[in-house]
Length: 188
Image (cartoon, rainbow, N blue to C red):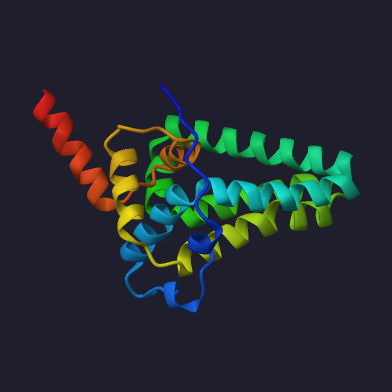
Protein backbone atom coordinates (compact mmCIF):
# COMPACT_ATOMS: atom_id res chain seq x y z
CA UNK A 1 0.00 0.00 0.00
CA UNK A 2 1.57 3.26 -1.14
CA UNK A 3 0.63 6.00 1.31
CA UNK A 4 1.05 9.63 0.32
CA UNK A 5 0.66 12.70 2.48
CA UNK A 6 -2.07 15.06 1.30
CA UNK A 7 -0.92 18.59 0.51
CA UNK A 8 -1.36 21.37 3.01
CA UNK A 9 -4.35 23.39 1.83
CA UNK A 10 -4.12 27.17 1.80
CA UNK A 11 -5.16 28.62 5.14
CA UNK A 12 -7.57 31.06 3.46
CA UNK A 13 -9.28 28.01 1.92
CA UNK A 14 -9.25 26.16 5.26
CA UNK A 15 -10.76 29.03 7.22
CA UNK A 16 -11.89 31.71 4.72
CA UNK A 17 -14.89 33.27 6.43
CA UNK A 18 -18.53 32.68 7.10
CA UNK A 19 -19.48 32.40 3.40
CA UNK A 20 -18.02 28.87 3.13
CA UNK A 21 -19.47 27.58 6.40
CA UNK A 22 -23.02 26.44 7.05
CA UNK A 23 -24.83 24.44 9.65
CA UNK A 24 -25.34 20.84 8.49
CA UNK A 25 -28.78 19.36 8.03
CA UNK A 26 -29.06 17.31 11.21
CA UNK A 27 -32.10 15.46 9.85
CA UNK A 28 -30.08 14.00 6.93
CA UNK A 29 -27.33 12.13 8.78
CA UNK A 30 -26.04 10.50 5.58
CA UNK A 31 -25.41 13.85 3.91
CA UNK A 32 -23.80 15.22 7.07
CA UNK A 33 -21.57 12.13 7.30
CA UNK A 34 -20.50 12.63 3.66
CA UNK A 35 -19.58 16.24 4.38
CA UNK A 36 -17.53 15.28 7.45
CA UNK A 37 -15.70 12.45 5.65
CA UNK A 38 -15.00 14.67 2.62
CA UNK A 39 -13.59 17.47 4.73
CA UNK A 40 -11.54 15.10 6.90
CA UNK A 41 -9.92 13.69 3.77
CA UNK A 42 -9.43 17.01 2.00
CA UNK A 43 -8.11 19.08 4.93
CA UNK A 44 -6.31 16.25 6.75
CA UNK A 45 -2.88 17.91 6.69
CA UNK A 46 -4.32 21.18 7.98
CA UNK A 47 -6.04 19.27 10.79
CA UNK A 48 -2.77 17.51 11.54
CA UNK A 49 -0.93 20.85 11.83
CA UNK A 50 -3.57 22.33 14.14
CA UNK A 51 -3.64 19.17 16.29
CA UNK A 52 0.17 19.03 16.38
CA UNK A 53 0.31 22.62 17.63
CA UNK A 54 -2.20 21.89 20.38
CA UNK A 55 -0.51 18.61 21.34
CA UNK A 56 2.87 20.38 21.38
CA UNK A 57 1.65 23.07 23.76
CA UNK A 58 0.01 20.56 26.11
CA UNK A 59 2.98 18.19 25.74
CA UNK A 60 5.37 20.99 26.65
CA UNK A 61 3.39 21.71 29.82
CA UNK A 62 2.97 18.05 30.82
CA UNK A 63 5.10 15.71 28.66
CA UNK A 64 4.69 12.47 30.64
CA UNK A 65 0.89 12.73 30.82
CA UNK A 66 0.67 13.65 27.13
CA UNK A 67 2.71 10.63 26.07
CA UNK A 68 0.73 8.41 28.42
CA UNK A 69 -2.56 9.80 27.10
CA UNK A 70 -1.52 9.32 23.48
CA UNK A 71 -0.44 5.73 24.11
CA UNK A 72 -3.66 4.88 25.92
CA UNK A 73 -5.84 6.32 23.13
CA UNK A 74 -3.86 4.50 20.42
CA UNK A 75 -4.01 1.21 22.33
CA UNK A 76 -7.73 1.50 23.06
CA UNK A 77 -8.48 2.45 19.43
CA UNK A 78 -6.41 -0.48 18.16
CA UNK A 79 -8.16 -2.93 20.49
CA UNK A 80 -11.60 -1.66 19.47
CA UNK A 81 -10.79 -1.82 15.73
CA UNK A 82 -9.35 -5.33 16.15
CA UNK A 83 -12.42 -6.45 18.10
CA UNK A 84 -14.74 -4.91 15.50
CA UNK A 85 -12.99 -6.81 12.72
CA UNK A 86 -13.28 -10.09 14.61
CA UNK A 87 -16.81 -9.74 15.98
CA UNK A 88 -19.65 -9.31 13.52
CA UNK A 89 -21.92 -7.50 15.99
CA UNK A 90 -19.23 -4.89 16.72
CA UNK A 91 -18.50 -4.48 13.01
CA UNK A 92 -22.12 -3.68 12.20
CA UNK A 93 -22.35 -1.31 15.17
CA UNK A 94 -19.16 0.49 14.16
CA UNK A 95 -20.40 0.91 10.60
CA UNK A 96 -23.89 2.08 11.58
CA UNK A 97 -22.86 4.33 14.47
CA UNK A 98 -19.31 5.61 13.82
CA UNK A 99 -19.68 8.56 16.18
CA UNK A 100 -20.79 6.26 18.98
CA UNK A 101 -17.81 4.01 18.25
CA UNK A 102 -15.38 6.94 18.54
CA UNK A 103 -17.16 8.12 21.69
CA UNK A 104 -16.78 4.66 23.29
CA UNK A 105 -13.06 4.73 22.46
CA UNK A 106 -12.72 8.20 23.99
CA UNK A 107 -14.73 7.32 27.12
CA UNK A 108 -12.74 4.11 27.65
CA UNK A 109 -9.52 6.10 27.18
CA UNK A 110 -10.76 8.73 29.63
CA UNK A 111 -11.39 6.14 32.34
CA UNK A 112 -8.01 4.51 31.83
CA UNK A 113 -6.22 7.86 31.90
CA UNK A 114 -8.16 9.00 34.98
CA UNK A 115 -6.54 6.14 36.87
CA UNK A 116 -3.18 7.82 36.24
CA UNK A 117 -4.38 11.36 37.01
CA UNK A 118 -3.91 12.87 33.56
CA UNK A 119 -7.51 13.86 32.80
CA UNK A 120 -6.88 17.54 31.97
CA UNK A 121 -4.07 16.58 29.61
CA UNK A 122 -6.47 14.14 27.95
CA UNK A 123 -9.18 16.77 27.61
CA UNK A 124 -7.00 19.55 26.20
CA UNK A 125 -4.35 17.53 24.39
CA UNK A 126 -6.40 14.79 22.77
CA UNK A 127 -10.14 15.38 22.95
CA UNK A 128 -10.16 19.12 22.18
CA UNK A 129 -8.23 18.81 18.87
CA UNK A 130 -10.57 15.99 17.80
CA UNK A 131 -13.59 18.11 18.71
CA UNK A 132 -12.25 21.07 16.71
CA UNK A 133 -11.66 18.82 13.68
CA UNK A 134 -15.19 17.43 13.90
CA UNK A 135 -16.77 20.88 14.26
CA UNK A 136 -14.79 22.29 11.31
CA UNK A 137 -15.50 19.22 9.14
CA UNK A 138 -19.21 19.47 9.99
CA UNK A 139 -19.54 23.18 9.24
CA UNK A 140 -17.20 23.61 6.24
CA UNK A 141 -18.97 23.39 2.89
CA UNK A 142 -17.31 21.25 0.23
CA UNK A 143 -15.95 22.66 -3.01
CA UNK A 144 -15.23 21.03 -6.39
CA UNK A 145 -11.55 20.35 -5.65
CA UNK A 146 -12.58 18.70 -2.40
CA UNK A 147 -14.98 16.35 -4.21
CA UNK A 148 -12.45 15.40 -6.93
CA UNK A 149 -9.70 14.64 -4.40
CA UNK A 150 -12.07 12.49 -2.37
CA UNK A 151 -13.16 10.50 -5.45
CA UNK A 152 -9.49 9.72 -6.17
CA UNK A 153 -8.99 8.58 -2.58
CA UNK A 154 -12.17 6.49 -2.66
CA UNK A 155 -11.38 4.53 -5.81
CA UNK A 156 -7.88 3.77 -4.62
CA UNK A 157 -5.85 6.10 -6.83
CA UNK A 158 -4.42 7.75 -3.71
CA UNK A 159 -3.96 6.48 -0.16
CA UNK A 160 -3.55 8.94 2.68
CA UNK A 161 -3.26 8.54 6.46
CA UNK A 162 -6.77 9.91 7.09
CA UNK A 163 -8.13 7.54 4.45
CA UNK A 164 -6.57 4.61 6.31
CA UNK A 165 -8.11 5.75 9.62
CA UNK A 166 -11.52 6.25 7.98
CA UNK A 167 -11.24 2.79 6.39
CA UNK A 168 -10.52 1.34 9.84
CA UNK A 169 -13.71 3.03 11.03
CA UNK A 170 -15.43 1.79 7.82
CA UNK A 171 -16.42 5.32 6.88
CA UNK A 172 -16.55 6.37 3.26
CA UNK A 173 -18.71 8.66 1.27
CA UNK A 174 -21.75 6.70 0.11
CA UNK A 175 -21.17 7.37 -3.56
CA UNK A 176 -17.50 6.46 -3.30
CA UNK A 177 -18.42 3.19 -1.62
CA UNK A 178 -20.95 2.35 -4.34
CA UNK A 179 -18.48 3.29 -7.08
CA UNK A 180 -15.73 1.17 -5.50
CA UNK A 181 -18.10 -1.83 -5.28
CA UNK A 182 -19.03 -1.37 -8.93
CA UNK A 183 -15.34 -1.24 -9.99
CA UNK A 184 -14.54 -4.43 -8.04
CA UNK A 185 -17.51 -6.24 -9.64
CA UNK A 186 -16.36 -5.16 -13.11
CA UNK A 187 -12.84 -6.48 -12.39
CA UNK A 188 -14.27 -9.90 -11.52
